[in-house]
Length: 430
Ligand code: ZN
Image 1: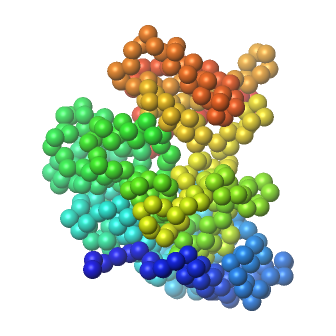
Image 2: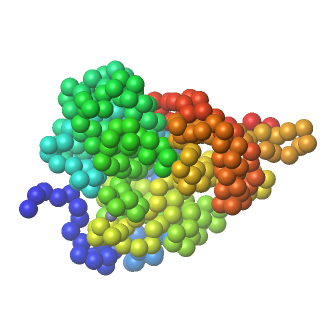
Image 3: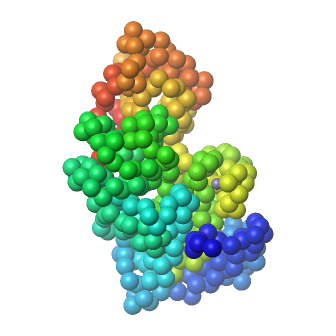
């Protein structure tokens, strides 16, 4: 039997028993090792011995990004500094960075479950994995590489950008898998076409990190590169880094590694659990993280739980794609809009190409207006642009319940990016 990185639980009860054990260990470990957690819990009167069931997690207070910044430079540290073998940091837009510490066991655990991502994506030791994401203190690349080596495939660590070298290695090294953002994948796909390399490369799969992408964009990438399959890999620095789940080949949702962390989906304002299938904020609690355990950490990422067992048979539960961040929520004419909802609507319209921009502005009448600039697909008849614009506006109205103006522009009229594309432009006065 080949080596597997999947857990061996036979049924959900076994997984839950493992989670309870991990939760109890984490709470005791943090209580003993971290003055931050000890003080925080003292204020609410909760003790490690109070955690007797998984539901008891609700007795524990939340941890936030502010707590991480307040504890700078080594927040939540629950082991002696001598046991820390590495740090990574999360790029914040303002003020102090969030720095997270790792013990050797934390690094080993990360590599193990990252190897599981490649296993779930159906790779073998024959695969060659071109890693086109960043290296350095902001994680990403090193996680992809460790997991690849642990899994036993060949890592080709090119890093981000550098389109010439990416193309050269796709041809010369015959890379079969590429790991990059969706924006970078689109850029590469268009470059491969421009250079007429499609018949010279062996790329079969792409693993997309850390960026939302519409189905139309994914379809375009798949066609241009002649791919077999594409996968979404979630992750954040606070929770080890990328690789905390993957969608399997049935694409019913993202399997998340429930043997490494507990995922709660809560209403971001009331902090009460939302019903399954409804959008809420991901709140995570780690089960074996030593250096910087997370206990009910509010990630600000929005998704929904998928309330059925995946048809692939894997016992690991599913959440939906990340639909945006609660911080990115836009209030437009008293409606809450998450950027991911626009992706979802555009994905239902086959004539829409992959790039779009949403512009919000306030006009002389004092009212707010939304304009969507949308690329049509390449061979679209220009005479049909007004009809397509109307259809998109109707669909947005139906699904998100806001009115908007749609300008259909030519294919490739909007900018492309090697990193994350900016698609929302709020020009309203504050
Ligand atoms: Zn599955």
